[in-house]
Image (cartoon, rainbow over the protein chains, first blue to last red):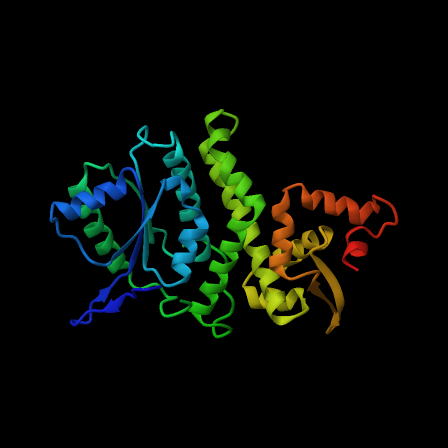
Length: 148
Length: 166
């Protein structure tokens, strides 16, 4: 994984977050946050996917295995999916991903599914701030520094 | 927190233990059995056939089973033939559950008895885990077909898959 979470100069832990953003809404929302010059933590690494429904639970678990401290999945609001119901499929998968994390003993709060539309640049920036803080409180992924 | 039981402290590092469980979970989600369930769950709930709570319960049960089975399979793949007590100690799964999983895996022909260790039967994999997974992926029915093939000796000769492999 290209970027690793690190200890800040004050000893604070800087989490590494992988965000899967759908091309049509959330990625455009992230783009809007950028073009609006909104500030949000640099801890996030965005991966653009065509639809949140494209994200296989394996992608999320693999990210954790490779040392991500948190994984964020963002998609279009219900009813707005470019592919009709891809986000609804993602919602069901997200339930099972959380269930699976709980089963294996990794905090389910490390994974989150959120809806962000193309016009919600402010919300995207806020979400990244919030999630970074949540993960920072949970602490580093015990698998950090493992497989790359 | 709920979840699989932990192996005895000191047997493996916490990170190593978590890594094994994550790999087992990845294997479980790659598996056709879980994929089918995850794929169909929304339409099953929407159709009113199953409530969301019941579906959650089913998936949790299935996930747990599959993660434990994959833990067992990966453990045998790494260490060679192992007995039920050895598997229970290495995976942190209770011996009763390990025994149950081993029975199922033997019935579908994925595990085979391979000698004895200290009075207990040791079990080995029929093929590498990835190969077994590939076989399951062809079609979810593959396991059933392969099982019938092996048990009943369909398509003549009773050798079935073993004959083809040989």
